[in-house]
Length: 376
Image 1 (cartoon, helix red, strand yellow):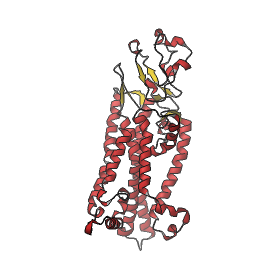
Image 2 (cartoon, helix red, strand yellow; image 1 turned 180 degrees about the horizontal axis):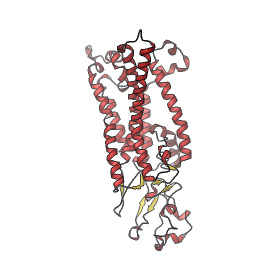
Image 3 (tube, one colour; image 1 turned 180 degrees about the vertical axis):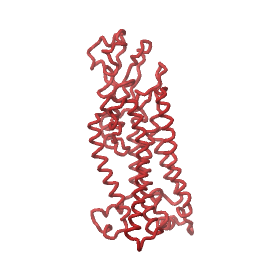
Image 4 (cartoon, one colour; image 1 turned 135 degrees about the vertical axis):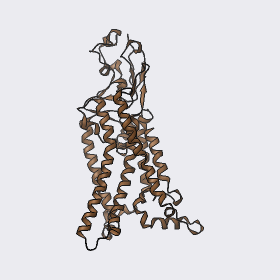
């Protein structure tokens, strides 16, 4: 008789010599087979190669399959907040609703940013609170929730149900609600994972192109509509600064979750049999040629994305004297006032406004800290 693993554990049924090796599942997808399977003959040594005793149906929860039940079946998507597979129909509906809300909020935020000096807008009572929001506190909350949501999978721990339910709500901070895997669910699990990871890496690049294209269109429209009063140094540069701010904001939002998806592509699990499977999707053999080709491409994307904070540093370093202006008696309040009133720093203000003048570089350090906590 073969050993039957308890809930949260998985046994390798591929070969007789490994049938006694029991592994703890990193996902909440391994069922307690002693209670759910009535066919005891499937746990006889002669059943190892039987087609009627499929390992996934014996050991995995609904929607899960493969070694350690670490891959999602057709029509399902892995949700890190749940640490389990969720139906695509449910995930897609949530994605459409949340993404629509975020796009609308994002557009409203950008319109508010470019019109923030409008006198009428400043006296429009329903949005007056926006002028007094502490962005530093919002950043702290955003960063904290991103780290908390990713901790279950990153640290390979399972939280009790009440806390798990709260993680479902907080998953919005790690963009876990975006069900890209469900867009290509007709493909095989391996191909679907590869395509999804590529999409996570490419979509922000396309959004960046869209941001700058929209800025170019705005400049062209302004130059034609206001041809008599238009000047590039005043109107054109102002538009460029606005879209540069939008680009920096986009990189701040997407860099940690995209880095997380990319770094997960290198986290492989080793079995006693010598086989290695990708932890985030155990249907993928880490020694296969397809995976090696995929990982080579992802390495290039990782390099591109990890250079973003370095770009921030270059932008800030060029303005170092303006970011930390010299004052008599090292007056910090006066230095902050001078810095925050400097017109040439408006486009990169998002990167330093919440820090002391001498700590103008801290956002770069904090971003790499987030990536390490979330993805490593």
